[in-house]
Length: 458
Image 1: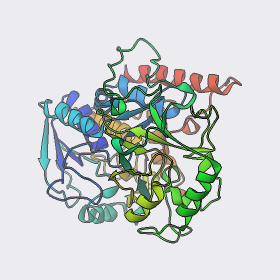
Image 2: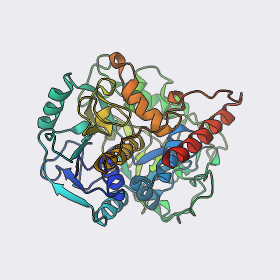
Image 3: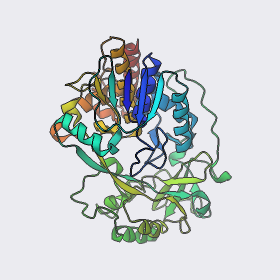
């Protein structure tokens, strides 16, 4: 029997992979028995931050990681395809549809049992059993203390932030225009003969107001100056000392970025490159992009606008964004504390713990950052837990693959400076004779990864 503690992306993926390989799995999910500060439902695989799985092409590392997962029958990737919403060259989903699809697939798998209960401490070793802890960065206090006793160190921590969501009908469409950067399409480029793309359903607001997958709020310099001044003087809800608080660099609150310099946002989440305002025929001085959050197109999230401002301040400041003067917010942004273990001190690249082979960790509790990375670690943990049940040796994916590079980073990074990490091409081993062209080099890394993955799976 395999016990998976936690029903998030990593836990669901681990359960799916193990069950599909003939192992009996029990998923222990504490919600709704015990709630968290950010989850809104009792659904498995609930997405609490963005609805984006980020890039979906092989010219970036997370796109490669997705393709590797698809080739290993990932339930998270399959559900994401069903729940896909327009997002340019990225993969974004309708949150509710995605969660329902994951739950439906697990419920239909006869070897998976879902139990709604809190697991207050690490299960003791039991003959024939494997345990995968995939409780995420919001692990309950009791289990967190049990984990801390096991790893022997204090938990590491960083702060994460969530973007606001606005009601589509409250967006001023006379100001906001529809366009993707550089005219990029939402459809991913299949690297080899792949299944046909699903039909895309749902057009934002039911209005055909131009081509592209994003709504764009264009700023003049005067607009930007007013917005910036309001942002940097607004009151935060939780943390006031920006210099002493550690945030994940890839998910910084906008006000933290703004305090780094007046133009930081214009070269970050508000960069206007690749956009042209149809009213002026010119690139805006800055721009806020809105990404469709539901298949129905009735909700849009502010891309890259994670924030810890007080809710009243959010409403005041964000209504200074052109096109959002009358915005109605479905959800305000918020900040929550993420805790994780020091993977290099604790883990093997199989995601097993070094001192207890029957115990695995997977997901954000290990220090990986991102939906896809969390699910990927669960995928490998589930495969290896099933192998142990069958009496086979666990296997680490080749380091030349995105799956293997992520596992190697989590188990071999410098433990004294261990920080959460997304997948990047930089953590893959370099090519022996790399092309000089950057795009060709990335393609060569992807080609090598997929070839080595094929050999490994065989």
